[in-house]
Amino acid sequence: MFTVPTFIGAVVLLLVRALLTVAFVREFLVKAKDIPAFARNDGLNVPTAWFVAVAELAAALSFATGVLAQLAGIGVIVLMIITSSLHVFKWHSTYWASAGGPEYDLLLLVLAAVITAFGAGPIAIPALFGM
Image (tube, rainbow, N blue to C red; front, top):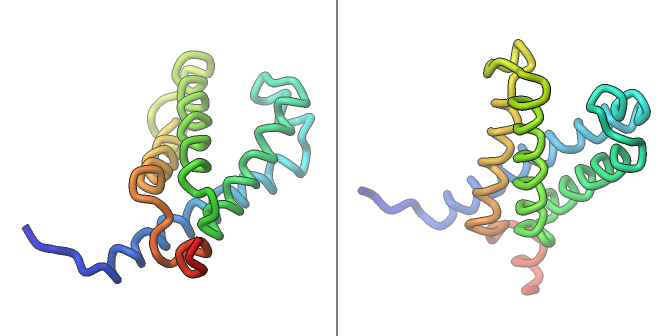
């Protein structure tokens, strides 16, 4: 085994947060463009669809800044478990993303779990300002 320098670990956590930020900003923008259509497509009522969209935007902001990132990670884990379950049990998706499968959601779940387990890292607003 080898030891990873602290700076490399910090950069890796920053990159994970950046990827999650981009993914959830994009997801919010797609959903917010037509909330009623999103609700219909996913079998949700409109208030729940708005809740999901706003929660994704809040998670993106949290990952971007590092503020409450571990709580956002827990929320994303729960959301991705629900979404993956819908893929399997309701939509009967195959595994592959090209066929609408859940592996994108599972990837986001694992990345959120990394932030939940290890925190936002030292390159985040709370760490930089001693919060």
